[in-house]
Every structure is written in structure tokens, then in C-alpha cells.
Image 1 (spheres, one colour):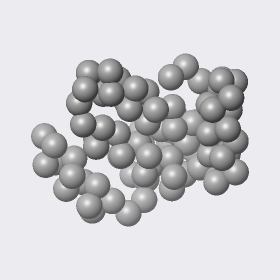
Image 2 (cartoon, rainbow, N blue to C red):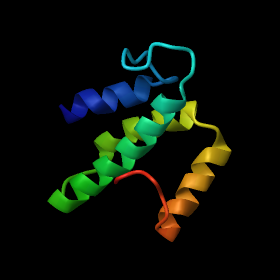
Image 3 (cartoon, rainbow, N blue to C red):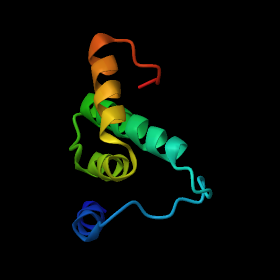
Image 4 (cartoon, rainbow, N blue to C red):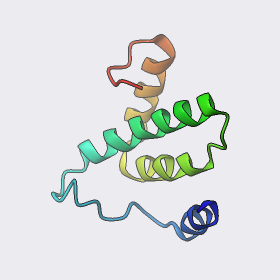
Length: 86
């Protein structure tokens, strides 16, 4: 399974179609992948597992989200004021 994930990451170009977000506005998709990335990291770190599978979420949110949003959310996470549940 890890090999499949690594192969997908190597072939990755941009965010694939996600049927949960069929419309043109990808704001919720951006938010979901950002939060999922940090949830994934937290869960795998707690279990002592490799966090490589989480990189998928990071690549997706980096291709969908404006940089200013990411910077703002990162600052909010550091300050403890981030609205999402991670």
C-alpha cells in the first residue's frame, strides 16, 4: 500500500476531481484537505507511524489554496486560535 501511495505522489500534477466538491468553487475542498493533512499527521504521529501518506493532502491543499490563506491558517494554528478541529 505504501508503494501505491508513493507512486501516486510521484505522478501527482494537480488536485484530482473530488466528487464531494463538484462545483467550481473549491474553497471547501481547500479547507478540508488542509485540515485532513494535519489530522493525518497527528494520528500517525500518535501511533508512531510514517507520515508519508499525509503528503497527499498537503499537495492537494497547496495546489488549491491561496498562499495567503495557508499562511494565515498556519499562524492561527501556532497561536492556538485555528477554527478547525485537528
